[in-house]
Image 1: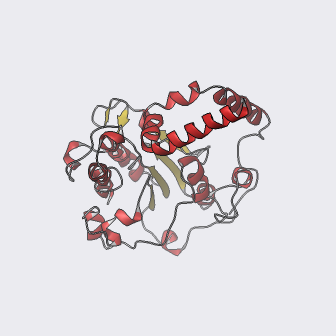
Image 2: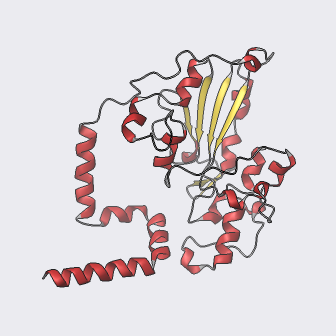
Image 3: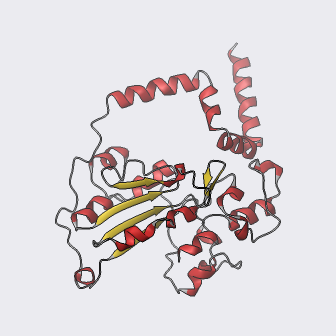
Length: 278
């Protein structure tokens, strides 16, 4: 019995390894499939319910930066200060022309002579892992889910300094970081100017900004992009930004060549399109 089970597990493992790209594309495009796997899904659900039932009340317990104050540049400004924090998705430093990539992928950023920090790595491979770390007071090694939940984050510190905090999202949410602050989930919009078939272009994050800019108060604005979130890269940008050809127009990446996938990805959200934000 056990040898046969061992052989079955080995066969499944080898199959997954050989067809990794196909499996990943399938689960990305069919998120409900994960709930159909038994008994794994059932056991995982029980565990999550148990964890949630014993979780402490939502909200930071330890105040951070309560004494934060605006610096001289902010205090000396004759007009309200607007600080825009553009939070990308699936960004690749090596694919940016401002980082010496030979293909022109960030033309407008290059025009502005921006400072690019090249020696930077993501602290997580998923949005749920990376976001809390980005805004936390802890280092990558010092952060864990427990202290991430009980300590205030950067948004709180900015708020203590007197800034209005606004989070505009075209991704999967702020993972609890923006609880208690103004939040707009624009990825749920049905605005035909920006959204089609359940997908909204990142350009929607710029829609309606006039009211925020016109506010007579210092503002810290977060724009959370969908960026180059795969595997359906071709759905992340409008036709006018379909620059690199041939491109992959299929969410099943196994149906495309490596060149097509690369071209599609580099035309997508975090390449040419968000250069409009510049």
